[in-house]
Length: 110
Length: 410
Image (tube, rainbow over all chains, first blue to last red; front, side):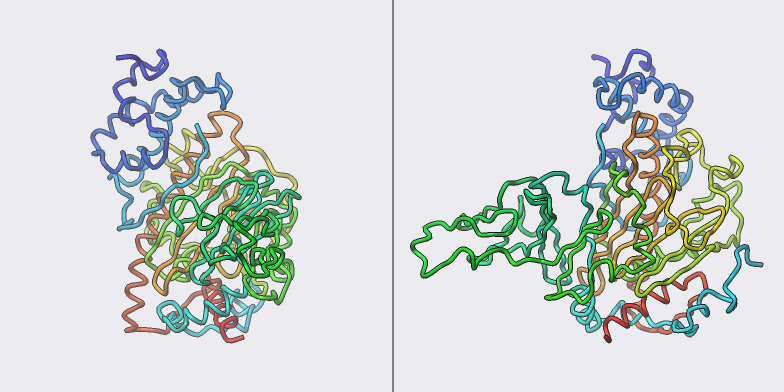
C-alpha cells in the first residue's frame, strides 16, 4: 500500500485511511460512527506530535501543500474533531444535542 | 455582589422604563395568527440582511435568497457597473422562477453575464432589463422595456447586503440601522473573508431561537462543558458588563479576563494545543484601532460585543474575527438558521487550524442550543403557562419581544 502521509509521520498511517477526510461533514460523521476506544487511541497517539505536524505543514505555502501534506492537515483537523468527544463530552455525540443538526455548507480548502 | 456597575436606576431593565419589569408572554412564538402579522408588519417592511458583499466577489456574481415568510425569492447580483441590485426572482413572461440551479426551491449562487429563463428562454441583463424575447413578433404590441425584472430595494452597509420588500421603504437602511449599529461603520468586516458557513432547519419559532443568543444567563446550565470539569463550580453565574438599546436593535458586551488569560485548567488541552477554541484564536492579526462603537459601554477589559439587528440578524464581534446568525422563519414553529464565522484569511496552516478549532467548538455548543430549543417550542405550544419572569440579564429578550410587538401593532 502506498503511503498517504509524509514519511516523517509514517507512524500514523494506520489512522490515515480512516481519518484523512477533506470536509468537516465527513469528519463529524466519522466521529458519530466511531466508538470512544477508537477515537481515544487516535487522540492519544497524535497528541504528542500535533505541534510538529502543524510545523511540518507550514514548511509549505498554505495554497501549495503537496497531497500527502494536505492529508496530514486533514488528520490534524480530525484530531480537533475527535478531541471534542475525548476531552469535552466523553462520548461521540454532543451531550443534550438531541436531534439537532448543523450542516457546514462552506469552508476553506485545504 | 455584581461585578459590573448597573445604571443609576438600579438595573439595566429599569434604565429603559418602557420595557417594564413584569412577566412576558411568549404567545407571539406559538400563534399562527401572530405569525401572519409578523409576515406583513416585519418581514415585508424591515431591512433584511441577505448576505455579504464578499458573497458577490465580481461583476456578474449573484445569489438567490428564499424569504419564506414573505413569500419572496430574491436574486441579488453585482452588475457590470459593480452596483449591487436585487430583483424578485420571477420571469415576467409566465411567472417561472428565473434563477435556480438543480432544484427551483433551493437557493443558488454563481456567476453569469445575463439571466436566462429555463422555461421559454427570455433573457434579462444584470440591471434587470429584458433583453431577449423568443419569437418576439408573435406577441401583441409587446415592448421589452415594459418587462424588466421587478426590483427589490437593496442597500449595502459596511459590506452587509440588505433588501427591503416594502413597496417604498419607510426609512433608508442607515436610518433603520440607527446610531448604535452605524457606529460600526469603521469596523473592517471586509478583512475577514475566510468563512465557515453553517445551516440548519430548527424546530422552533425564530424568536425562541434568537432569544437564546441574546442572553448568557443560560450558559452555565445548558453549556456546563464550556468550563472544564476540574474548575466547574455549581451555581456559577454570568453577568454581562453592558447592555444598550437603540430603537428595535440591542446589544450587550461581556467583559473580564479572556479565557486564555485564565489559568490553564480553564481551557481544554486542544485549546492550549491549537491556541484557539471557544472564543476563537488567541493570537492572529490585530485590528487597530477598533471603532469606539464596538464597545459603547467602554467596558475594560472588553470581551465580546453582541449586536442584535432587528429583526433577524446577530453580529458577534470578538475583535479580530466575527460571527453572524440569521433566523429565517419558515412557519410559526420552525425556522431556517444560518450562521458563519469569519476570520482574516489564514496565512499558514497554524492559523487555518486555529480557525478550524474555533469553528468546530462553535458547532458543539450551538448543537446544544438547537437540541434544547425544540423542547422549548414544544413546551410553549402546550400553552399551559404564559407570563414568564425575565431577569436583568435577559433584558434583550424582553426588548426583542417588545420590539416585535411594537412593529406588529404599528
